[in-house]
Image (cartoon, rainbow, N blue to C red; front, side, top):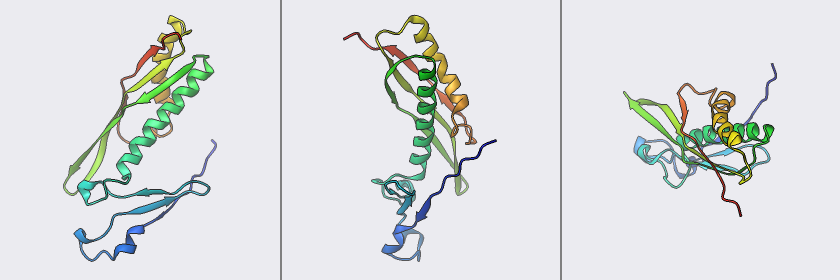
Length: 160
C-alpha cells in the first residue's frame, strides 16, 4: 500500500476581531494555507453565524466530492479513448441537524457530460457506464460515511 501525505495549516483569522466571549459575538473566519497554493478563506455557514460570502466546510466537502468524481471520470474516459469536451456538475448535499450536532447525510452529483461529435453509439453508452466506475474509484467518495449518488447525463456535441 502506498501512502500520500497532505498537509494544511488552518489559522482562525477571526481572532483579529476579538475573543470568543459570547457565542454570538465572535468571528467564524479562518484561513487554510497549503504550501505553494493560494490561501483559502472560509467561515461558518450563515445559519451558524458565519459569513455567507466565504466558503464554509460544507461547501468545501461537497466541492471535494464533486471534483474527485470528475477527475476520476475524466481519467477513465481518457484511458478508454472517449473524448470528453465538456463537463458541468450541479451537485448538492444535505446536512441534517439533531440535538446540537449534525452530519452530511448524502450527496447527489448531476454531471452533464459532453462528448466529441465523432464518438460512436458504443462510446456514448460506455461513457454513461463509466460514472459507476468513477464512483468506485473516487478517493473522496470512498472516504466519507454518507452515500454519494449520481444522476449523469451524457450527450454528443453537435458537429461544427
